[in-house]
Length: 180
Image (tube, rainbow, N blue to C red; front, side, top):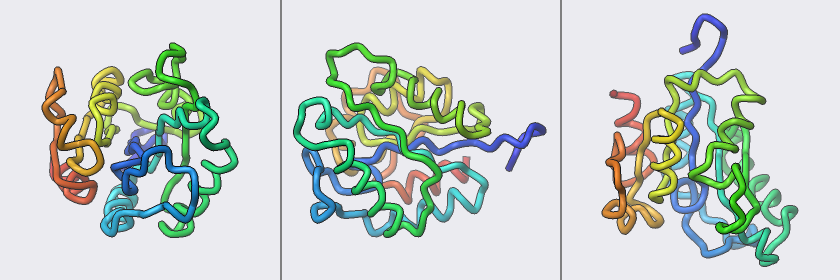
């Protein structure tokens, strides 16, 4: 599933509440809980040629709740549990009111991913459990999928524009994406 220039679509996936259980300001590997269906969802995406790119707002770093090193330890543990399925992690450490370009729904993290990987943006998707994830997909003009895990059930009613896919969890969202 590459274009003529060797580019592949990306699945830009939110971390907390989408790939892993929502833990307010997750700071310790001991508190990491990967959803039981996450590995299968990522395997399906990889089998269809998607890059797996995690894009996550991590204001806990900016708030001084945990360090960047703590976050990297969590990402390393995720990679171990998910057999290295994630191609790249991008994070925004800034506070919501700092006005940075990288914090979702800004497109900074997606731009960094496009700089680093040969991504076919046109065939890409943004998957997450919050309104800002869907707004990111809309701003990038890519498909958007809302999962009802994490904050998804509550945020489903806050969307100003509907997501292209709404599903109970990541695996069901991926199945719907691959059938579209």
